[in-house]
Length: 70
Image 1 (cartoon, rainbow, N blue to C red):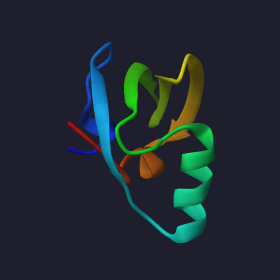
Image 2 (tube, one colour; image 1 turned 180 degrees about the vertical axis):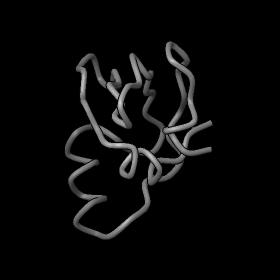
Image 3 (cartoon, helix red, strand yellow; image 1 turned 45 degrees about the vertical axis):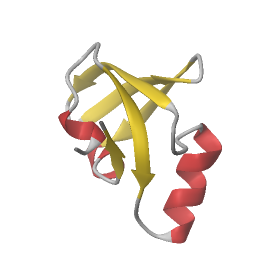
Image 4 (cartoon, one colour; image 1 turned 60 degrees about the vertical axis):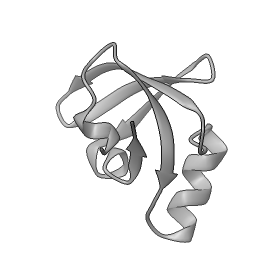
């Protein structure tokens, strides 16, 4: 399921990062790589704050839809 559907506080394992090459590269530089664990800290106003690799990152819902987790 897309990262945007994950509930707050629930961790997920990244399976695939989609989108254009430029978007994928940007997300991979932030730490969104296959096998990585990501936790949604909060979701408000269409934006998500997630915890990945011991760092908090804010991303928009459109980018979160491109990140598939389980």
